Image (cartoon, rainbow, N blue to C red):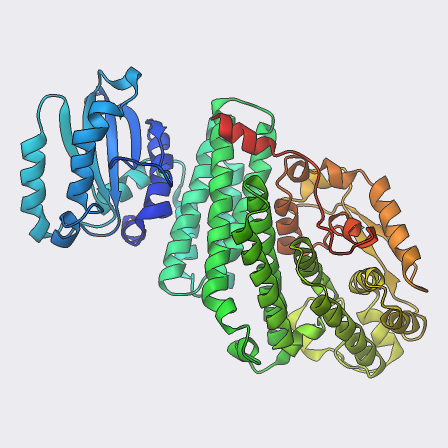
Length: 580
């Protein structure tokens, strides 16, 4: 276990990785963190400042300077970014003028914190420096990879809080990271045990930090072997588990509440980082090449290609939604953000156009990914022309697939059933395979917003002809959804059924709009009320729940379909974190 943690620490980068876990580790060890890493501010060599007790129980001020990897002779000196320069800044500038008044009487420990070891070539230089400057109230300590790993194991991951069965799940999740399904299953067991293993608010804080740091370990390990699938799925699950844990703390301003909220925000940042890295390395460089992404799915069946491509489209859309959310907390009109959003939408459209498998889902539940991308494309304010063309093509291919008994979207989720679909062209089989649909009303609603009467007539004729038995439906959260959405531990929500499909689609849009207005469950979700609406979308994608139409119906009934949708509610959690 220690070797695993040691390798993880050694592979961490300095900025937003090693310095990101250090404050949480210190807090868990009983330190009072008074300064965290920041961007755009002069840190004067100090990445983290904290007040704590030494081995003899004496209270001291600890000033950490963080560097990644091993400390070599080259990393010791040479420019302003090297270790010696940071130490000089601490001694010459930070200690004389930057220490807060309540802590100026404390003895000072300057801690050199790095993920690896001190090379022999740098050892004598470091020893001479620390010996020369150890005087009065100033002393030095080294926290290398072994030290940090030991602290992780005895602190945040101490044995009594991560007993043998949990350690086993954690180790298996990391060891099997190149087998994403298996890794995810073990990580899910770990999260469940952590979520249910505490009884106090302080225990909730500790469990939240454990989840976050375990996810970091999994991510770094996966990044090293260049397979980000397991940490992406696991980061979604961590977010949802953390949200379930944070709900009792909403509107509270206690120290424990602020601590849990901080972990949630760090976990969101890590999830965004994993998603962005996945897009940058695995998807975006190849969207402009015909069939490149489809061919990259190593398989003998088109079923795997369809499943993987729609999964990637959904991840791209969720990356965009989190970018929109993060932008709304800063400057929503930031031109760089808008350019990035437009670029992601354009990349998604290139991905669709160059991989025709995305012109028609194989599963009806893939309406989730279709809806997520449509919402993102419209909310970003990008052009609607390509979106409309995609919807037209999907309607035409759906019509052809049903009429020819091809691979039309079905209700099955068992892999063997998907391989065999369609087993035959009988009416009885089609009625079983497509008993109900959320994809068809979703397509019809968006086509109605584009005033595409021709495509709507095609869907209407299909419904009246070959799909008379098919129930057109959408899913709406109910009040009890708040209790079950984030863990998916019971059935919840209501089905809006027998949706009308005729004419120009105005009746369909009006029916959906009225149902959304009369339903109170969506607004009652804590993630929506707190302003963290992408958590709801994450739950829908992760647990395969249809995206609630409340997210997109306002965009379709407004005069201009490209009007961005807004979710009401202020970010209560953000304000609490700011207060801290």
